[in-house]
Image (cartoon, rainbow over all chains, first blue to last red; front, side):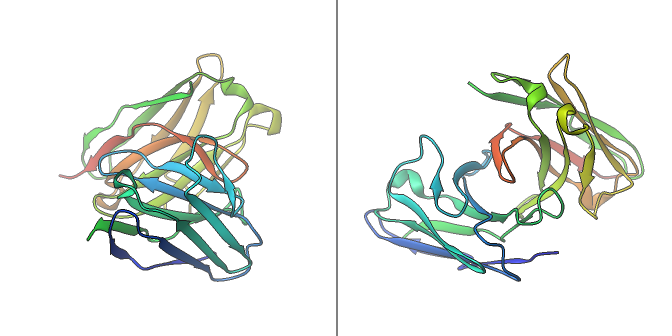
Length: 109
Length: 119
């Protein structure tokens, strides 16, 4: 199974900061990576797929990059509503063995 | 607007069975593959399984952790996906989400239903 290592597991930031979260796959997965945002008590929400394609309705301050084994989610100017937990997910092996990173909790500094 | 509403969760004893339902609206249900994803309390996300659309055979795939115990099915006439869970274990305790499948990613999510496996 393809393992995804997400880092950091948590971070503290202030409104207006630039935030970067990374995911590393245990083998090359081309651009088959998605990012999700989850707020407490709510379902995850798709932000980005194909490593860098923004889902409809997602603010442009969110961006994704990378291919192969290393990927990045960047929030260019953190807003209050962005404090949440973020997950990456690989689908290189779709539909078998879809796997998520462990999550990154973005907290208020 | 896409809506996915899960139901059927609750408290169940180890070894027993439970069936979850996911009622969909706002899209042509039969055209899409559907997945179930779960989240144990305070933990991350885990893909459970997947059912293809009828156009692709309506066949299923499962995570190793549930294969042989869980079964996903669908009723396109009612726009409902099901997750039949047998031989439940305490480690199956989680919020179970129904998702509309994109081309590998999980495009839309229901609100989730909590399954607690405990004696």
